[in-house]
Every structure is written in C-alpha cells, then in structure tokens.
Length: 222
Length: 371
Image 1 (cartoon, rainbow over the protein chains, first blue to last red):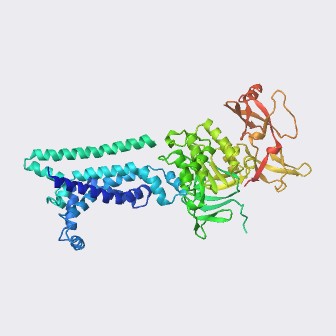
Image 2: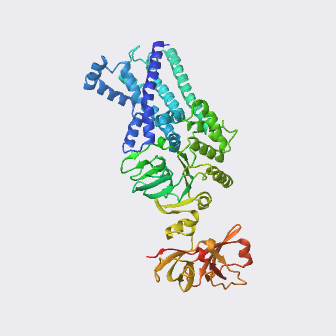
C-alpha cells in the first residue's frame, strides 16, 4: 500500500471539494434563478466535462498552461513554479473536470426551492443574506452534500486528465488510480487490489451518504 | 398635508411583461377584495404592493409615506414595507416547525421572548399544541393558519392575502373564512384579498375591485359592484347574465323613475335624468331581482315590469334550479335566474312552457349609453 499516494489522493479530493464548493454554490444558485440569454451557454459549458474525454481536457490544459505558452509562463512567474506536472496543476485540472458534479446537484437543489418560500423570508423581514443563510442553504443542503460526495469520489477515481496534466511523480502528482494502473502493469496485483478496494469502499461510502442524506431530508420535510 | 389615516393608495401602469392599469385605495381596517378571472393580474398587483416586483409607472403609498414612485425612483425594500403576505400555497419554511416559522418574523422581538410571542400568535389562530410540528405534518387548514400567524407576527402595516382559501377543501374553507371574519375585526390595517371566488369576496370584503387584464374596471361596496356594474364587461365578470339593450323612453320625476323601451316592453328603473330620452342603453337586472309569477295564478301587477316568455333551459343545482327564459319581445336573449327546486316543481316548469316574470324595478340598472 502506497500511503503517500493515498494521502495525496485524499488531499487532492479535499482541496478540489473546498475550491469547488465556493464556486458552485453561487454559480448553481445563479443558474437556478436567472433566465438571462447567457444561461443556456453557461449551462452547456458547465456540463461539457461530462461528455468530453478527460484526455481532451488534459491536452488543452497542457497546451494552454505548458511552460512554453504565455499563460504557462505567467503562472510560472506568479507562483514561482510551473502549473503542469505539479500538485497545483493537478488541482486546476481536477476542479475543471468536476465542475458539473459540483454545480448541477446544487443548481437542482436551489431550483427545488419555491420562489415564494424565499419571498416569504423577505416579507418576514429577513435580509437577502439572512434568507440565504436561514432558509435557502438548509433547504439546499442535500444538493450541496451530493455535490461534495460526487466531487470527492470522482476526484479519487480520476485518471485520464490527472495523468495528462500531472504525469506520475511520486509524492507530487501520483494518485491512487494511477498507482493502481502502474501496479497492474508491473503485475503487482496484490498491491493494486488493496488500493482498488480502498477506492471501492470510499466511493460506495460517498454514494451511500448521498442517498441516506436525501432520504432523511425527504422523510423530514416532504 | 396628507391625512395619516388615508390607508393604502395604489396606482400602477405598465405595458409589459404583464399589462397593468390599476388604481384603488384601501382604508385602515378595510378589507378590499381584488376579483377577476385567473391570469387577470391580481397576484401581480399584490406582489407589486409587497415590493417583490416593480412597475414601469405608478405609485404606492401608505398613510402618506411613499413606498414606490416610478417618477422619482423611490422604491422601499420588501423588508421595510412590512407587509404581512399570505401566499397562495402558504410558502411555509419546510425545515422549520410551526413555531419557528412564526418566530422568523419576530426579529423585532428580543430572542428570549420570541418563542413566547410565536406561541401567542399561533394561539390567536387556534393552533395551540401544534407549535412543534413541521409543515408537512399539518393539514392544509393548519398550514394556512400558520401562514396567517406568520404574516401577522411582524405587526404588519398591510395584510396581503393571495387566494388564501384556494388550497383547502370546501368545509375547511368555510371554517377558515369565518375565522378570517373574526380575525379582521381585530385588525386596523388595510387588508387586500385576492380571489376569483365572488361569493367569498362578497362575504368577506368591504370593497370589491374588479380586475380584468390588469385593469381595474370598477371598485366599490360589494352590493354596488354586484348589482350595479358600470359596464357589460364588469357584468360578465361578476356573473350577471341578464344584460340587454333598450332605448330611454321617458323620465318621471314624480315617481322618481326612468322608463325604458325594451323592444316594445316598458321597463321601469331607478330615476336617471342624466340619460338622454331616445338614446340606446345597456341595462342589467341581477338574477336576485327576477321573480317568477305563479303559473296557475299570474299576477298582473303594473309596477313590477312583467315580461312574458318561454322556458328555454333548466339546470338542477341541488336545492335550486337555474332557469333561463326567452322573453317574447326579445327572443334572441335569455333572462336567467334561480328558484328553489320545490318552486320549479310546483309551477310545472319544463322546457317550452310559457312563464311570466317580474323584473323588480329596484334591481334594474342602466349601465351606459350603448355605442
């Protein structure tokens, strides 16, 4: 068992969740309640990673942020290190790949809150911000937990884009799914099996949390 | 100086997205019912008063304080208008108990007294013992009461009720309506009720305002609007079927009456010297002012506008029968009214038999000179 690899995978999954939740709550809420001309385009962009092969996304990230490019040079100057083949690059790739898994459940959760319920909050004297905190967030909680669980599990299992952007640098960019692939290639099926089992258990736990959470929400409020 | 007790004044005008041309007033303690068919803009008017949507033109003020004025750009926030709003589906917060739902609107009360105040508000709407239930564990009627308690908890400046009885069964509706009648006696704020149910509006409201396609067509006391519509459009909306055309025949000042010539039949109505003799007019007679003569002993009274005709249609409505008669002088039209079922049976009313009616003079109302 490669514990540093496991730790790196966990670190990547947790950081991806942390970054995405900050982005996905305002974006999902905006998409749920605005019908501007841009909405369809933004929804399409959000969903794009679902249908795009991870290698395609990885390729574009490489050619955009590679060291020979202007953007790559810019980030290299700002961060003091290149984006590709580093943990930060891996994080960027992981965030982009997981956008639909984070945004869509949150958008659906906000869409399910009737407009009048928000308005009742305002009419009861709550400010917009307080209505968001006291009324909207608790009602959107199942969607937020679903988003976190899916993002977490999906990041742990991501392979293509991680390999393209991160390479396979132990302790830096080598994740569990890549390690499994590596071990299988070198016929170390025992080690691969242990890591595969860990991924299986974690993924199952994530999905179980989602279903349990949704059931208890429905039992309580519906 | 504008009087402090002038109540709520609303003037709204816009072309899109929902056309509006509404103007009305509602005094403190008064209940004004906005009536009209579905999609006529009633709810939009209510939402505009609450500040949930804007309007392109117009103004809203309460006791002289301007809440909204399109011309000057004044637009007080929803929170600062302090409107108690009962939404059509109640819009309770599903994750909060009945008590918490009400307590949300008690931010002006110290935290230590909130629970106690919320319980008092729930007791006011007869919900003692249900404080800790979540909305999904309450019946439709109980949810409506929580919504009313929440709307009143903030000590609102205006109470807005959007079809508050639409989502409950008929028995519960009647009980809740009776409760509202009792409750509003204790309120000294303007109350606006949106409904498409004329009987409900008539029972609860001090004033009716008929809305059609966003426009206020007529407002006034219920009896005025329901018996003396100002146009055939209002007559249709308040379900008066008996709209006819006639010519003004003469005025009789001594009898305080104006006589119409309705295709050869003389119709006496209230004195209206403003109408030009000879002019063509539209007139109505609400069905409550139509009396069926006993068919075995027809009355020959001269002062009750007798009209002969034949029964065109009969519709049984339980205890009553809706009768439609084609007058002999104007067979293109029908006079519609209701009689108790036993009266219809005793008089042998059947389609095709002849019948004589009286159109009571006090109910005859001339609307306007026809085009």
